[in-house]
Image (cartoon, rainbow, N blue to C red; front, side, top):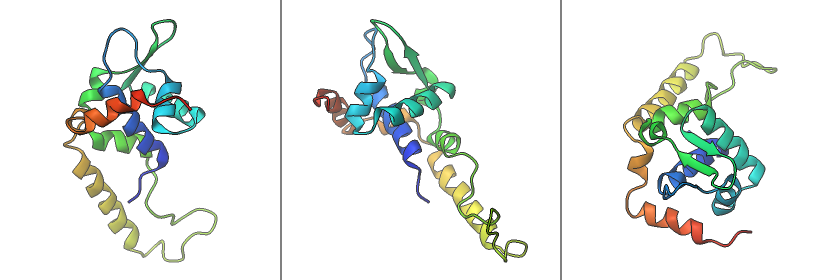
Length: 148
């Protein structure tokens, strides 16, 4: 199974925010986009979704920025990936050109079970688990990158 770029970026943004100092202001969406080498518009959509899931908090103004919520630190990676990926199946059986095997095929069920097994493997881990040494040092060094 391959994660979408949206989910990948969401996890990386959460990891970056998890190591940010909480001195009253956090990194901006633009600075995080630059640090992750992605377009601002894409990062903004991801941040908006993360905020709606309650894992990122945003503040406007002079001391504004992004921060990870306590829920964001402790939520299961498996749950986050399920939320960010959505409910789509691994293969397309219906749609505009439906598979002729769809009513008697066992592949769909096997792949759905494999997808759920993938999520279950991620369930025990949290963002906090993913940001320990040496990862934290690398994530913090991203803040030192010059803006593009």
